Image (cartoon, rainbow, N blue to C red):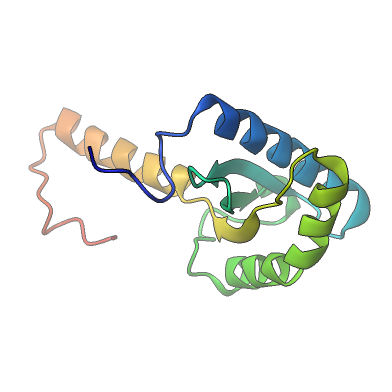
Amino acid sequence: MKKRVGFGPTQGNRNQRMASVMKRELSVLLMNHFDFVGVHITNVLLTPDCRFARVYVRQGFDVGESKEDTAESPQVQKLVKSLNAELPKFRAHLGKTMNVRYVPELKVDYDHGQENAERVEAILAKIRSGEVVSEENDSSD
């Protein structure tokens, strides 16, 4: 049987617990010690060996993000870049608060979940209205 490597839905119980603790600790850290107002950690995914973690963030609409802000917008890219610059401090905090031998390497990415959901809803609305939907017409990827 081939061993799966990478991020994904096959996380075990330990990985899920660890990801949950990391998400909670990082959220508290962002709210209390950094000037990232309105930034929400939506998900944390760990590799099966718990050596690497991908932290997905989203900026709340109540802080000035408009519907047009996507992962490609300069404001979002600046947010992800500044969060990635603070990763050593985040890791140090996790090392102090979590009872683990090794704190995973972190990487921050923008969460595309809302955009993907809106795209699917638009496609479903077209299907309901009787329009023909094809992959060639939908070039938003």
